[in-house]
Image (cartoon, rainbow, N blue to C red; front, side, top):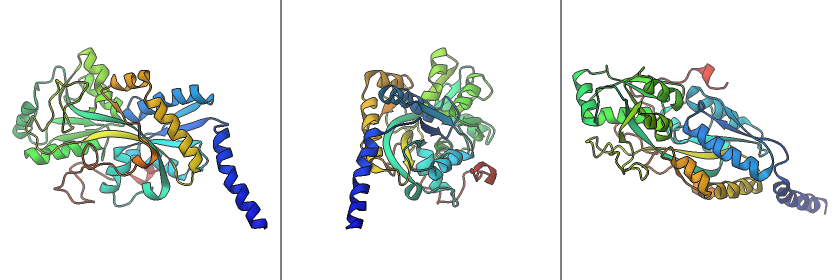
Amino acid sequence: MAWLIVAFVVFCAAPAQAQNYPTKPIHILSPYAPGGISDIASRILGAKLTEAWGQQVVVENRPGGNGFIAMTAAAKAAPDGYTYVMATVGDVAINPALFKEMPYDVDRDLAPVAMVSDAPMVLAAHADAPFKSVAEVIAAAKAQPGRISVATPGNGSVNQIVLEWMALNTGTRFQHIPYKGGAPAAAALAGGDIPLGILASSSVAPHVKSGRIRVLAVTMGKRSRFNPEWPTLQEAGVSEVDASNWTALFAPKGTPAPVIDKLNGEVLKILTMPDVKERFAGGGVDTHPLECGGVGRPRETGGGALPRHRPKGEYPTGLSRPSQSHMGR
């Protein structure tokens, strides 16, 4: 009889925990610097969750190690519903495909809460750079192999994968310049420190509006509904490339299901709010309110695809493993 009482108490405790949740501040870890798509998504959701629940939601930027620092911290956090991570396609799909040794395992260590957003990436040029089209970029890269510099948010990012993909499909080589996040890379591009970048539309949006950055193409297989005047790389002659940078909220594995369900429901509600959709749309980003079961391994296109020419574990030119000191160990 004693074990029946214990089982009943445990069974009833989870719904009660969710009913009273949250009772203290919640932390959302962002694997990248402020101003990037993960940071933007975290802060938009965080502000709305604070309004809805009356508990502060703290966004912690933990950039470095190709996302390993924040992802590992989330994987090792107590599964009590007070620590989450706003992961990107790179953290969930690209890293496991590139790195043979990982300090975290998405399936083993994390539980999906909700898909949040999907941002197209763009090939963009500084306003004064001598590139008005993708064709001109390709021609310059062929004339000066390995000398045309292109900024991305970091080594091993989906942005660099697109750069290498573009190089493979056009028979060119570029000089990859990794930054510590999309916002720093966009700032360098806008400042004229580098002529080209492959960045999330949300990272370049304010600089496009100011006229300091010019978008040459989007990396998705179809044009952005927010900026239909931008051609795709495929339309510009770069075959097969179809990638975007989505974000999704994850919890440490073992977080009570009723808590995840409650947060998932609130996130879905937030993502349908007109002002939230408008804020995301300002950066050319779509919101993707999906149930928990809709978050997992990404689709092959639109962010999940890797160049078919390169086997797992083989690194693109200039792509190095994060040092042990950057892995959060």
